Figure 1: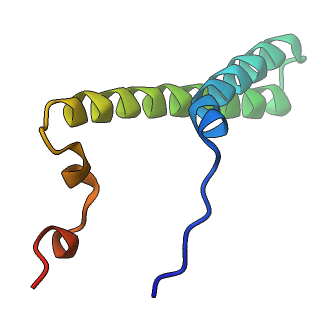
Figure 2 (figure 1 turned 60 degrees about the vertical axis):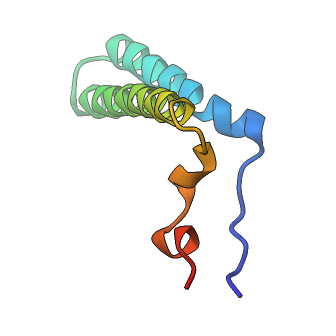
Length: 87
């Protein structure tokens, strides 16, 4: 028996990429407002990474949902090979 995985609630799960994007933009703005130096560079790089990560997650979710909508049995995409063909 496999232990059940804990999951985020749907509103939290759907909001995470937007939180990453907003945090990234905030960090980029903060980097611009900080005096130039190592800290400004680190905050800027972290902001860019967070913004890029949020956008990548949003695009991957969109592509997965589009792919899933093209199949008659959409749940078949999430099954492992063992679950698809039990012997």
